Amino acid sequence: MLTFREGWRSFKEGLDWRFIREYWLAVWNHAWEIFWGAGLIGVAFTIYTLYYSPPWALLGWAVALGFLVAGYAAWRSDHVRLIPKFSVTTLCPPNETDTNNESMTNLFIQIIPECLTDAPVRGCRARLLQVSKRFEESENWRVTGMDSPLFLDWDYYGSCEFTLESGIRQRLNVCRWSNQFRMVIPCVTPLPSKFRNIFNDFETFKFDIRFTATDCEPVDVSVLVSLRNREWNDPQISLIQGM
Image (cartoon, rainbow, N blue to C red):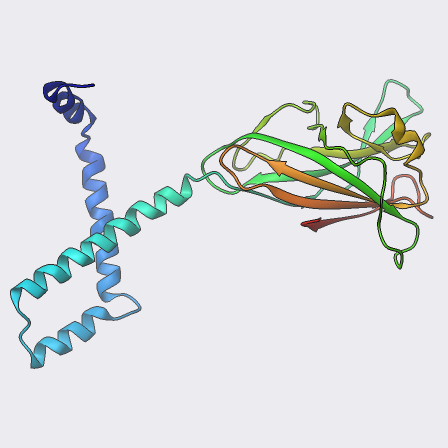
């Protein structure tokens, strides 16, 4: 535990008069907005003083309260900006990728989680919770044997934890197939061998996905994929919020 002298020295070393000046300017601006802003508190107070003379104690408390609220507003704007938060609203166009085999081209279905604040989102990972399928849109979804949570792979990076940063669009692979092998293959680690008995190219599949990250609320999305009566590089895909 620091002594009083050590604590005082640490306090003085942490003072930066430039930041203190910027803080008080921000507080003053917020106080001015509160008093003369949309609520017109200042106008109402001015009219009140034309007919009544408020005691000095009341004026003091009003000024103190105004600066307290303004200080909170100045602090909150920066605090909210630095709270990590992300969303998943982007479904990428089907991504054709060359392979070592010149006659084979893979096609990936990908989504992008995006950082919404200035603070980086650390430890972000996505799990495929389950896969459902149906043949006709009028049918109910049937949960398949792919119902054990498995980590999905980041584009080029595998299934590691990833740090999302504002303005950087990192793709997440959901599934893939090729021009020679149209069976849908989930991009998970590990890949269970039973996928061969579950996936095909004539049913619609729903991938239920949960994103998690450090100090963030989980985000759930579903990706629908269908190759029925379509070319290998023209699938029907959609992104649904929630599951």
